[in-house]
Structures are given as structure tokens and as C-alpha cells.
Image 1 (cartoon, rainbow, N blue to C red):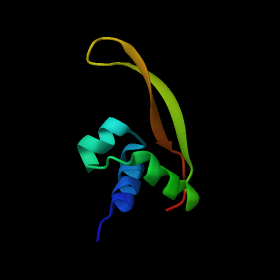
Image 2: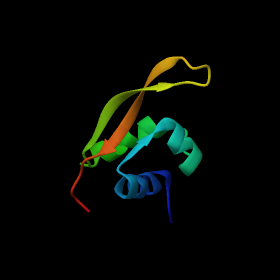
Image 3: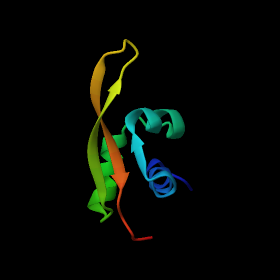
Image 4: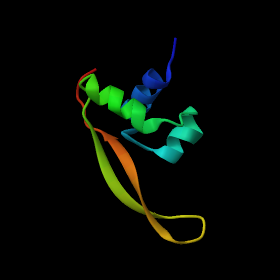
Length: 73
């Protein structure tokens, strides 16, 4: 049975990274940071990288993109 954690891990392995908006849109996961914490606690290497994007009003804002760096299966 797929869970938020297993879906997130599969997504990271397939695409290499994820942001909160992608997690909501693609996985229906509104608690991305909590599941990243769990995966890290289980030994997965996931790096948080701050990136700057434009929001809907054209203002620059910084968000975190989580990058999967693990070589384990």
C-alpha cells in the first residue's frame, strides 16, 4: 500500500528533487517537510536548497527545493 512517505521517496528517486508546491500538486502531500524529516531519519540523504522564484504578483521569494542525493535503494 502506497503512503505519503513511499510516494515521496519514489518521486524523489524519479525526478531528483521536489518543492512544496510540487508535493501538493503531484502527490497531494501538504506536509512535505515532515516526510523529508522522516526520510532523513531513516538514512536517506536529502539536501535542502534555497531557490528564488517569482510569485503570482511578480515578487521574488525564496523557497526550499529538496534534492535527493542518496545512492541507496
